[in-house]
Length: 155
Ligand SMILES: [Cu+2]
Image 1 (cartoon, rainbow, N blue to C red):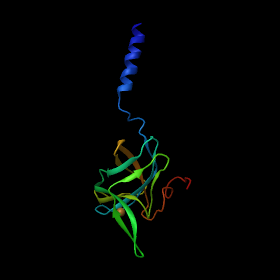
Image 2: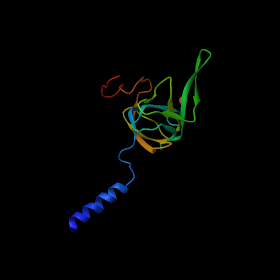
Image 3: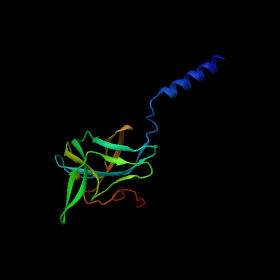
Image 4: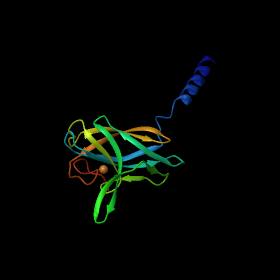
């Protein structure tokens, strides 16, 4: 009887824990561009929302950058320009794609050089899901996608 009671207590304690192990926001193929200290870099990824409700990426941060902004690209006549956005919506079943020429995270004023092959932590802040920290592999400065300079992957 005592064992059974202990098991029930353990189960109740487990239920009371915050759901950190199963974040509803899943990040696929994150990557960032190599860059020099003091300069800017960009990070890209695909964010999937496995919850039932819309969520929004509202901020991001990283210990290697003074600030991280959410950016998109817009066409200004024939010139493509970057513009900050206040949030990036992530709908269930409709992953948000951050890629060169589109939405991206701008890593501003790097505390140190980002070298190809290393991995940097980036924390994403979602309106509903809260903070999700992603380990982001650094690709060569000229890379166009997550697979270059590392193990071959699809896409
Ligand atoms: Cu930018």
